[in-house]
Amino acid sequence: MKTELWAIGNSRGSESPTHHRAIGFGKSVELRVERTAWSFLPQRTPRQGLGRSFPGCRPSADDELLLENAGPNGVDCKEWKW
Image 1: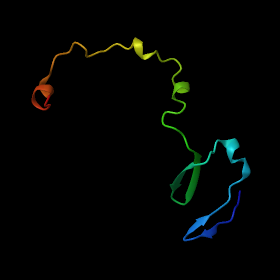
Image 2 (image 1 turned 90 degrees about the vertical axis):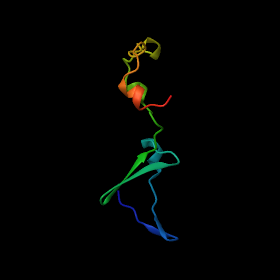
Image 3 (image 1 turned 90 degrees about the horizontal axis):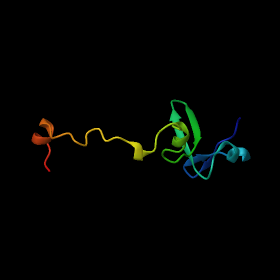
Image 4 (image 1 turned 30 degrees about the vertical axis):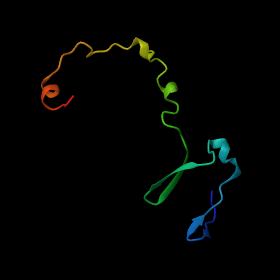
């Protein structure tokens, strides 16, 4: 797609097509600049879609605490101030 840039104060502006919501753009976007290319990406919240990425993970209540009964080591005694 081609579009024109025009002056807006000391900046430049452009129009985007009306189907921007169909590809996931809301009111704001993430802009990435790599060398001579600009990429506009839908803005995502942190960890968005993480649940779909790990469907087989167990709930945290099933976690086993591996170091629960471990005593202090050399680093704990020398470097840390409790």
